[in-house]
Length: 335
Image 1: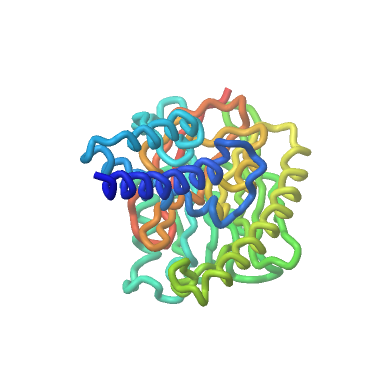
Image 2: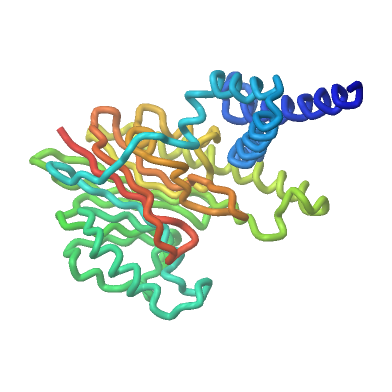
């Protein structure tokens, strides 16, 4: 009996540590905890704590209350990870917008297939969004997208072949490139008319994490390298977000932001970008909404955000596997 109590106490202590780390990383206990690596680890921490909960539930022991308490304390933040609402796509009277990092249309054969550009084009035609924002768009590999008469491309660097692209069923005006200092990423902005009103659309690709298979927490020789890399990239992203927000705040038009943020919804970069805007997944999303899988951890790093006065009708994460990212789409209404 004594050994049993010691075992339960020890496991409950470990569980409490994991729960505290989860709540801190999510920001449920305040915004003072700023460790980018732990923010990225929230899905893993949540999974581990869920395993603990099932363990305690099967044994019907008191530490199961720890998980329930964490749900109460972190309920609002957990919605950034998982949404319960149904999100059937409704297009009536709405504007449909898609965001998709296409990974250069498989330019370097990451996927063992020669027809990835054609598959992406067929997918876009089947979904038929009004506007599509592409990140990592490679001009030389891109299909024609004949169903979209309007297209604007802005390279990330100078006259490069890879950059941001927007295709549209509506005319696009006043396009400008968004460039970041000492970065291979960037973006663009355009204006378009919707129901006689001007809306501004931003398509931005923020600094990449560039995490590879060697960057794991399990391999000790790489864990410190991973921590430094994530901290360094997070600092660059914060500078880019500050620069972007200055550009965005100059506009008087209702705005839509399509972005590969390269960070998740528990990061400081996300909260800074979201200021004064809505996350369409939070409004009408369903499930984990993962857009990028890193060693099977569901990371939501791609976002469609709108000005607060724009109504979000629906949101969808598409399951196609033509890139390392999944496309997302939202139907919105203005006015």
